[in-house]
View 1 (spheres, rainbow, N blue to C red):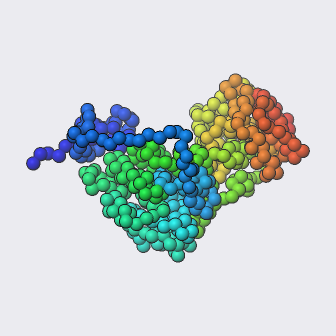
View 2: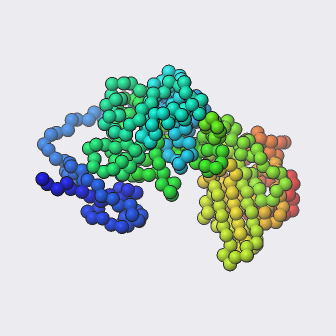
Length: 458
């Protein structure tokens, strides 16, 4: 009997080797290369066999097809992230840290759709059916017409789905699924890629919406091959701290909607509840007369959102001062500190700096530079900012304050929540104040330092 051929595959990036190596040369990770059976029909250099393929018919770009119909779940924040609802035949990859609420939101969404007459199937590879029922009772969904099954064999799953029309199928999780035609263990690169490909093929052929729940690595990336994110139509990430009540569902890829769109949820005893006005909730417990606090008017996807940025600057007894950041980029903070030191004369090099974005939100846009600088200056000078002041703007290395996009939308959100003062870049397009909202344009960072030190109430 011929010996079964094998290869060694990196579980992080999918690179293949003829022998085991300790460190993957492609991605640089250690101890990620494992042995797998080589594909039986692997044919480098061309297609095997003499069978000719069939001719493919091409169509014009300006077709007469209608926009894809959408199914709305009834959960407004969830439908917002999807781009207005679920598109038939789409495949969604949902990732997040353990315990963040992936299975909870998937079960809640399936229950809402099922209550509207859609046929929803929930396939669990990690839990028994009784365990899923226990969660459903805790969420108040015990009477929802969702059909449950515990299975991990993709062949059995597809055979069961062939004769039954389903509108939504939830796979929890894709790392537990396996193909019996592959010799590798479940969760490996080959199994995740092969199982996903079969489920995606089924979704496109039948018009069924498939939600794949995926695990993440300790670095926060989806476990499995990177090609999985390219195969699916939508990639969603659950963000937030497990000890915090807020959860952010962010679309990092969406073929049928806007990317970076977010939905805000609050974790309660009865599951995830949508937050209709996140700005008001993030600012609900804000103190008025505390130095080191600034309100940033940001844009998350298509939604303007106000969030509090907190900073603490204290003399350091150490030779190397400590820098701790939660919810923002560490490199961006180092740049803002360097500009404050070199262009504004603030000696922050010998101080410990702690920065926190309240509410568990992670800010990615550079428009938060001005609000971060204001919080740092306020803490360093011991001068509280007025509670009705909002800021946004990007800071350049020469100390100039640069305009950012969608200034009008940011100001409208600030005015709606009762803010009366906005410190904005001097050349902001579309930035208009009024009787209720006064604009204070700044061209360079030194002007912001003078405003905070000279007048702490506005």
